[in-house]
Length: 94
Image 1 (tube, helix red, strand yellow):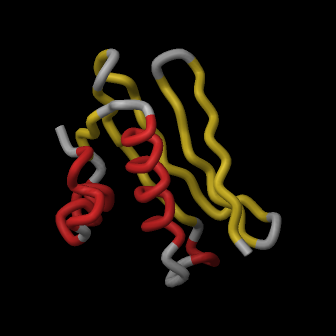
Image 2 (cartoon, one colour):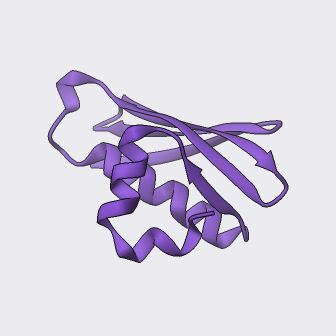
């Protein structure tokens, strides 16, 4: 079972994913301005690889952006590739 927690600290924030109660990875972002967030890093620990957890983090970020009227600039190569492959989240791209 997975759980994603969102932490915000000023203009920065992260989405942390937990797998069976253990922190498995995170995706960090920085607010570029009021309406735009930059996804700068996505990482999942090697022991949790192959479970689609990084993709869940990117989708959580896209959902957050959509719900808060924000656009996303995916600087992280993983996040950028995930946006390119999934048309259903491209509506939040800046």
